Length: 368
Image (tube, rainbow, N blue to C red):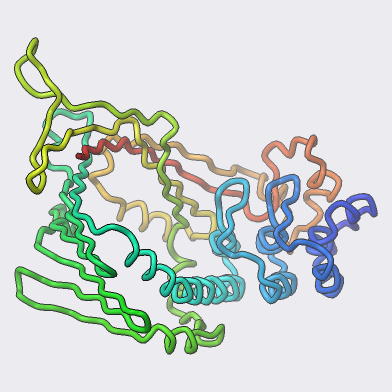
């Protein structure tokens, strides 16, 4: 079965997307010389997002060779890698993951010299950051995680102290750790100091040498890593701050309340609270088997209910699967329907039917 032909009108407006729709990778290669590889179609997808969701491997290879951004999000805030995982195709995941890791490593290392210069030029400082989770259930907030991070900056060196290390078997793991970064022009050093065990782990690297050693071939992902992504849910977490509110903390007896202050390194500091910050966790599972979905659900953090989690499920039902355009079912949606911004696709789209759960947690933070 072949995809419906794209009309000349659509091809003129969206030449790259049209070639991707038909998986005409030869025309795509030619058209990339005159068109922006990051052009977005009426559904908020770049050519790479469209190629990945349709399962067109040949087009994906061409777009990646021409520098298509794998970390760019589509209109629904999913990256190309997340969409690749949703296809369930190991080769697709390997292609996108390899390019993502290469760009991530080369960009990070390439920006180190400039970052070190900016750190060195900025004023030295010391600061404390306190954060905590709260729950609407009485007394539960006392067992929710909290910590005070202390940060020092001197020259091109940074130090961060923390005491909350993780969570295991319904217990918060505490300890005293210091993370020290020391940078020079050509070299950098990262130290992890375990104050409890009196152990120091040090990692040093030569920036110029590391940059030369980063190549696309060196970023080949292991089969185990690809398999792990295909057998775990796709998670997107972000902060919703549209209703954020700042307020001064108060102290004292009712009727005589004043602004709360604390002494930090010899300075009197005012205390503020940040309210209405929601942590939004979106999880997709359409690529998983029923057994994998059951296993993941059973492994969910039981403290989510204590943190005031609200959950919403969005799942495709019945014959809706046949309404989604994929590499094996390309005629479910016509090009005219897809590329017409005024046409309502309703519950139809390209790729697999999305199985999505959305969890919301309210986050409260105090700072000085």
